[in-house]
Amino acid sequence: MAYTNIDGVRVWGNPDSGALAQAKTCAETGNVVQTLLMADHHKGYSQPIGGVVVYDGQISPSGVGYDIACGNKAVRTKLSVKDIQPGLANIMDEIARRISFGVGRVNNERVGHDLFDDPDWAVFMAVGRQEHDKLKALAQSQLGTVGSGNHFVDLLEEAGTGRVWIANHFGSRGFGHKTASGFINLAAGRDFLASAPGEKMDQPPVLLDLNSELGDMYYRAMKLAGRYAYAGRDYVIRQVLAILGTEADLEVHNHHNYAWKETHGGKEVVVVRKGATPSAPGQVGFIGGSMCDISVIVKGKDSTESKDSYYSTVHGAGRIMSRTQAAGKMNWKTRTRSGGQITTAQMLEAVRDFGVELRGAGTDESPFVYRRLQEVLDAHAGTIEVMHVLKPVGVCMAGADEFDPYKD
Image (cartoon, rainbow, N blue to C red; front, side, top):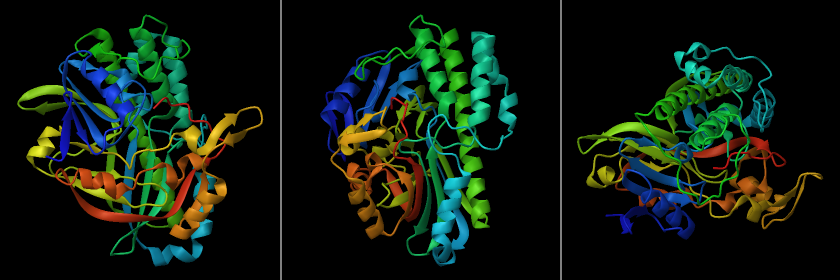
């Protein structure tokens, strides 16, 4: 097998000691069936990123994390890269202008959607009228915005065909963040809208019984945040298709921060994937590399190793350098960083050499802070098949001075 079993944790790739310690803590807490680390794993909040925890009858708000339903949508357009290359700089300028990037940003144009009439909003009304109204207003104002951190909108060229793909990466925005913090607060006996308690990164997971009132409420709220994330990614793709003046003929859409009810070995379990992509046999997913690396479309294999992985795989290349290590410590009064290992000049040179038209991004998202994607894909070769290889030609992210509030 391509994975190793370390104290009961199934580990793909090279084990990171901090993430492994977190995985062991998860394995020792609650009704755990199995704990796993994908090859792109690294430390997260409570449950490591790239971590998968399988529960019997329980769900973990801290395991799903603060960016509920973070994920990717990718579409293949009817254009070839030669069609966009002459105007690529202008296209990227228009993407940066039309799509809202950055923390707390609201959409310049109100986006209506059926999900705002979804019956699961009753979950928040059950918490309280103030909580319901505040979260719904926030969700309405931010639908279709991308956020900051490692969230992006990319244009990519498919190897072998030259076809242009559009891909994005973000989740449920401030709505998901406040949903997560609210239920973590309720689980600890605090008010839903109380300030974030500042728990330690290595604390045990917050667990709710799925058949309890609070567990059922969280599950329904999480699913609503999932539909919200899907709607946001759909909107952004539509905007970029309009900018390009084209249509899509193939799409891939998946979450990688979520809890799924699944059947494994004839038994229903809850699979909490944080930074891990579902990869059941035949299931298609997008896995993104850094701004100077490939991204891929993959399909799950039907193999013994796939079953052992609870049909899970990587969600990206995996961070090997922290944001502070890369970019330095931020002085929020002066909006400047100091002490980082990566300079802006180094990042821009790498991007230029790779042939990418970049908008936004800080050195904490430079290609130097991530593994090579092929390295982690090789570790999962027994569970996934690569269908399409994509090279970025345009990357758009939030600016370097944007703060990422998500604890994941």
